[in-house]
Length: 459
Image (tube, rainbow, N blue to C red; front, side, top):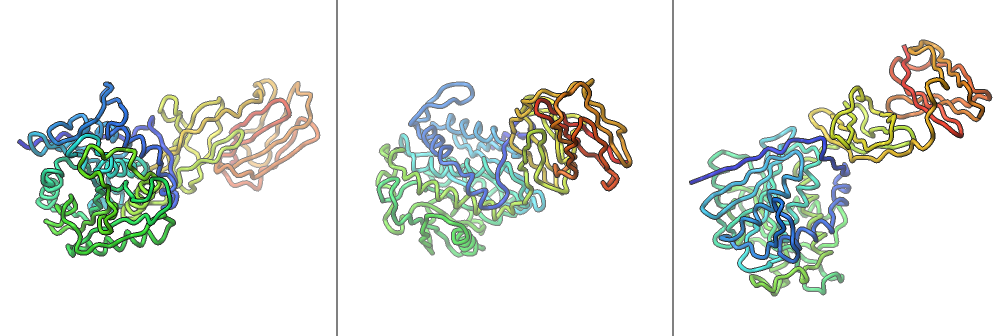
């Protein structure tokens, strides 16, 4: 009986990550330590925790890999902005699929996929490496706004006949899904040079003349040539049909296989044996291939340039993205801060803060930023007087019972830009705001001992 279990993972404010906004920034975010940990855990080299239990995933053969599938679900559940489908297609087979809907063209679908089942114990290269790369791409890209839909798919029962991917491709064809490209990763961790040393770093792209598969291959090569990768491509046409991409060729979808270079006889010598261990992985080579495929998926997905970075000063946090909507968030509670919807935010207590930025159809959230710069004692309510507020032409500032005359007055607009600065010789001043446009500003008052930032309004 066909069974689908679908879990929607909401865009939770309490789960926040920050990543770059350009393709190069995306490339730079690919983390070798994340890849290493995933491969070690998924190939049974070290224990991990699944559903609260400490387990060792030593074997992932199709009749014995439910814990491995549960591990993948758990990995996806840690991400935002995706829909998880646990797709059981026969008595043992489970495809684990995460879908990130495109903001502009949700019906334009690109897949990045790998099989996770094995024929023996360990099987680090075949195919914990491909699985880890899919998870790493999902970890990074799920934080980003994309025009098109990306599906992160991990197939079961590849080793006994491509069963999982064929089931999915058949369903997609019958549903009329507009799949524009399928990037299949199968064994991307072995290079014949000694692990960690420089070498040819060749990899294969296998393709046949189905749909726009050749164009897809050329697009990957364009990404390879546009950015700096320590890789050398070997194109294979006609390429092998012995992996999950060929399930999509069966329904005339564009698809390619990317992996280590079987064409030049530079594949792992431990293929389909329990000697396929983590120690045989060339980590720099594996890292480079993961960076390439992540960059390609960001390009195909249509990365939208919403800047979710934040600039921090001693008294203020400012979202770098201009002309957007903002909501500042207390990361300790995961809750929005009432009334804090300007581009800049002036915390009144030290804490951990982030901003949600919405531009057009896209919403992204910054990293949580530790704000602990309020080291100076704050002025008390009796020590400072600001009037009138709102003001039309001048704002008067008076400091009472403050002996230090080394005072600075600074006025910031909501973007964090200083629009006025004054250093009076006494602890009072009249600040001319007549030239400022109407709106909200922030006045920062500082001397050698104390500081304070106050919202002011120009009418």
